[in-house]
Image 1 (tube, rainbow, N blue to C red):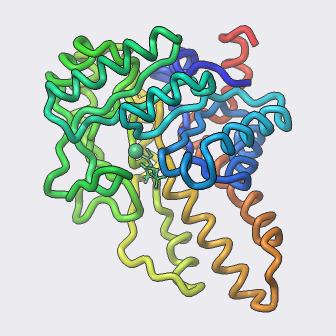
Image 2 (image 1 turned 120 degrees about the vertical axis):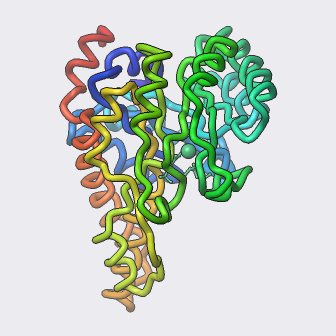
Length: 316
Ligand code: G3H
Ligand code: 13P
Ligand code: ZN
């Protein structure tokens, strides 16, 4: 059942984090639902602008609605990931999305407030919640590439002002992570000190951690052994998710790790079976492996096993 992102946050805040997983195709969707049912976890499906363009924006909506029927016990929200203003409005008007992210973090503070406030006004009129971003993660997002040297941690005082001025429902904070498979050059890690300060200024307000893939080293090694070339790939320590959740992080975004599972499965499959060409053969392996990956990740997030409590709290 599709629920509001806000409702999921109310149940999770301070106790566990909801996994927000990006999908682009049917196989990812099937693996995601199966993994969340196996681990009895609520979840957020994220759709990026690139995912909407990959086939057609209507396609993922149809796939998700079908998955909702195939897995009737699932409880999830549907979220636009890293939207610009026009895409936010398209999603708000579609009647399908539970929440949208307006990412104007590359703009000045004032301009970010102005754009975010416009989106909040339109979204709230339709009972859709809004995630905004303040500070800048390193790495590459669809419409903006941020060099590590330009990445800026979120300023806690600004975060308080920003939330008050925009009325956004949750805030993506830059606390040292970056998008993609190459995080933390050197000895950097998560800035829990920044998170703690933000939580002091915004108690009970849900925070979001982007760029949270763990980039498992065994996955990277298997990809490289099967012909890949990912050198120096590194991610976030998943054992830190619960500490972040206690400090107000209620949504944790994971995309890259899923891509690594896909790459490992397909590279290994075709290396081991050079004579095969039926796309369904590795597809079946991928769906099972992705489901297993999701279930394990939900354990780290603390969302595994929470489905009955979420259903009870939401009266489902
Ligand atoms: O943060 C970006 C997400 O990983 C989505 O990636 O824009 O390539 O679909 P994408
Ligand atoms: P990763 O690249 O670490 O998976 O981050 C995904 C993300 O933040 C999507 O918004
Ligand atoms: Zn992101």
